[in-house]
Length: 281
Image 1 (cartoon, one colour):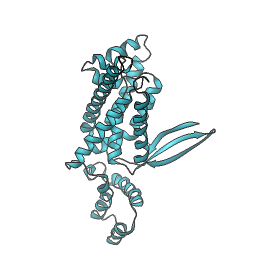
Image 2 (spheres, rainbow, N blue to C red):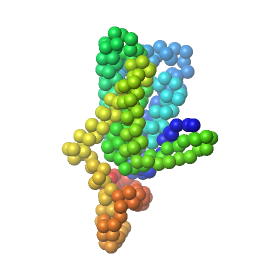
Image 3 (cartoon, rainbow, N blue to C red):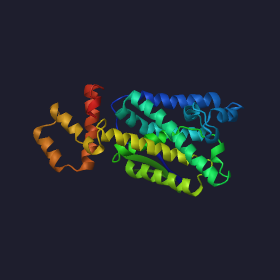
Image 4 (cartoon, rainbow, N blue to C red):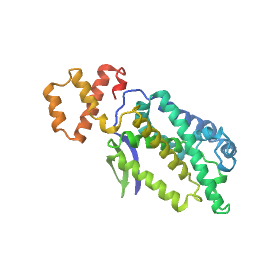
């Protein structure tokens, strides 16, 4: 049986997410250039984030190094699926700053957890002395942001059960929420000895969750429960739907149907306006 892996979501965007694409390409290029060198382990030791001997620059360089090919591909798959929507909301510059800052915060939280465990275990915990590398801390922050902004949007999962492939979709609230619970459990049962930086995943997720939550509280971003009617309001204002259609939608359409139709309207508006109406969404 192949455990479910994400392959897409039902969340169209308006802006071309070129920062997200650039991050994916940059990570891949870095691995192609460095990952097959004979001294790659030494590179990871120098530029990865090691909690017991942290250097400021490694909080950021570690985000673009990966342990192996599968580590890279897994991270880039998640970033490809959810990063475009978060960039769509935060804007290109805002998303880049969010990605880098939260990635560094994820390393710092991982470092604090690793050092605490090393002290409590009298040095037997390995995490304080091995390099933490990979984009997963920053991507965990993107997942935290997506969890806050798009809890109802569905993520499509692919699986293989007894050699029979299939897909299913669930709201991101459940997919990402279960993923986060698994990180907490993994950290609790063996995070100090596993070699996987679950602390960075937890720290990244919480960083993204709290930053986006704060932006919603101060009014910079709209909460998800106000998002669904925006498309109808804009379409109504532009004469794309009639008074009667607008009234019926507001009175009778369920939230799930409203969200599906809202995404359809977004695609139609995008083809009509291009990217000139980004701020409405």
